[in-house]
Length: 361
Image 1 (tube, rainbow, N blue to C red):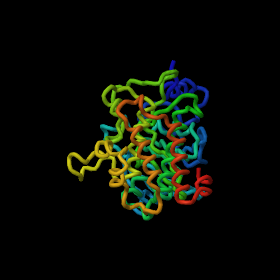
Image 2: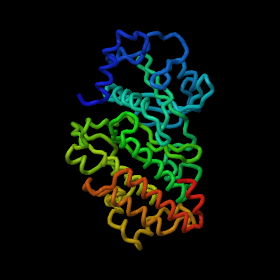
Image 3: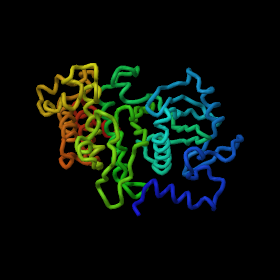
Image 4: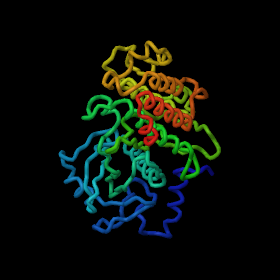
C-alpha cells in the first residue's frame, strides 16, 4: 500500500492498545482530544510538544488583540510566550462549520509532516494543541513576517536585490528538500507555495510554512491525480488545473510566480488593476526575455546600486522557464538552486562583492 498520511494514522489507530496515554490517537474529530485535561508537563511527539488549551491561553494573554499578528484562511495567528520563556507564533483554527472537516484534515497533515521534516528553510513546528474542539499550531516565531508583506511595503525594511536573491535561494532549497524526499523516503508536493507562506527570520532567511495542503506522492510515481484542484489562485499550475494531475512541477510553477513577485514587487493577483493586468504571469511572461522591456518591470523600490542588469536577466530567464505552461519544460528545484547560486555570484561580482557572495551561498 502506498505510504501516506492515511496509512500513518491507521497505524497509530492499530497501536492504540499499546499506548493509551498518547494524545495523538486517530479518532473522529469530535473525540480527538487530550484524555487528561488537567495541567501537566508538556508531552513530546516526534520532536513536537503537545500543549493543552490553558497553556495556549497563558501564552497569548487569553488571545489578546495586542498579541494578534494576523489573520489567514485557517484562523488567527498570535504572538505567544511559552512557560519556558520561548517566544512563538500560535495559529488558532477558527473556521465556519462547513469547513471544519477540511480544517481538521489540514491540521493533521501539517502536524504529521512537520513533525518528521527538519530543514533550515522549513518553518519549525514547536508543537500543537488538540484539546477538545480547540486546534492550535505552535511555530518558532519569525521576526520579519512573510515575504509578501515586505514586497508590498508593509515591512519596515525595503528589500534590495541581494536580500531578494537570498530569499529566493532559501525558498528553492526548502522546496528541493521536499521534492528530494530527504527524511521520509518519499517526495512531497507543497501545493500551496506562495509569498505569504514564505516566512522570514531576523536574518531574512526564508522558511516555507503552511503544509496543510501538502501531498505525499504515491510510492514510485511522479504524478498523482486529485479529485479537487487545491491551492491559491494566481499560483495554480495551469497543467494541474486542466488535468487534475499533481506533480512536483506544480510547485516549480508556483516558485516561478514568487520569483516574478521578487523581481517586480507586484502581487501574483492584483484585483485593483485592469482586467488585462491582474494576473502577474500573464502580464509579464512575454517580456521576461526582452532585455529592454524587462527594465520597465523591475521593482522601483529596489536601490539601483544593489543589482546588475546581467543578474536581473538571468533571474528573469529562470522565472520564465518555471512558469511555462508545459511542465516538462520547467527546471527541477535542484536546477533552480544551482542557477540562483550562480545569479548571486554574478550580481555580487558585478558589484565588487564576491567574497561576501561566497559566504552567503
